[in-house]
Image 1: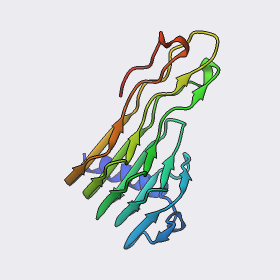
Image 2: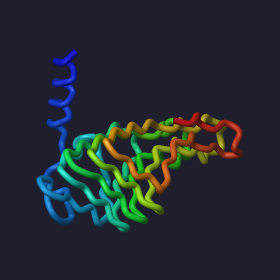
Image 3: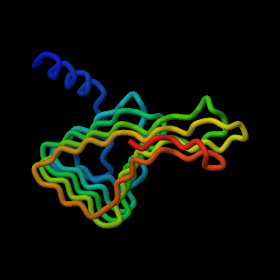
Image 4: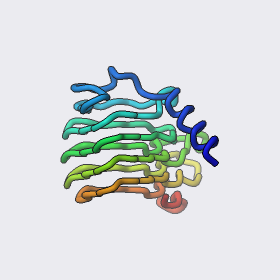
Length: 168
């Protein structure tokens, strides 16, 4: 019930990205993402008012993390921007991973033409046949959604294309 939801957000707040994460602006007004940010498992929540990811802005992780973008305002992804939680390219079956789990909550979400969100499974490129990674999960919750970009939840591919991962 309510305690569980409260505790989940408490845990999420404990893992929030620092204010210095913004390349311009701040978390209280508008946070600009203008370059590639490699996300890790230590900080997996972006809590802010408004976030704009411009054409050179990217949020990237290849370890199958759960990443939350929790906004009180709006998210804008401009042409060329990327949120990529896809699995990695692997030579051994031991590194095969599913795509990440992305949750976005905002008032207005605008994913413009040429913007990309992907949580594709990892691609297995090794000589031994193994199953590629499954696609991840994307949850989007918004009062208004403008969508003209691309979203990919594909399973990863395997060498020879015979044992692909499942879609998200």
